[in-house]
Length: 71
Image (cartoon, rainbow, N blue to C red):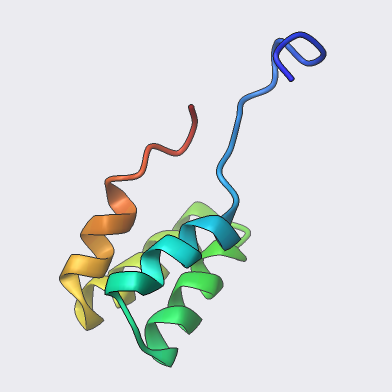
């Protein structure tokens, strides 16, 4: 990909992130919040969703915030 698109950042797929996330962070509400965050269209909305996740499960929040947004 770098050869074809040298200026494009590599991003992670939320489906793959969720597959790893759910191993240690189970529950329909956590799943729902994660996917809601992934679908946000503004930084403000994303931060609000992440704060909600943190209030539900700080370890789940930490897991996601430790992931670098780009490679």
